[in-house]
Length: 52
Image (cartoon, rainbow, N blue to C red):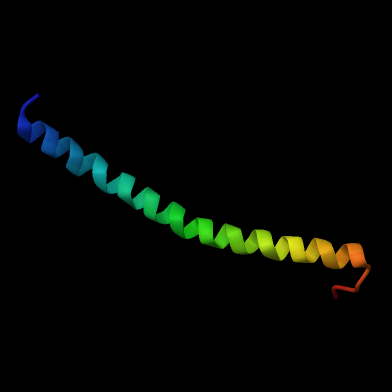
């Protein structure tokens, strides 16, 4: 393959890959918080407190 072909491939594939990793990193923070809230909810239910 020629050098320009490689540059083209990296340009076309590289950006979506970087975007996916960025979005996954952002989602991970949200999932971590969601997991903590769910654990707190389970603890409250186990203690028998009214939630609503």
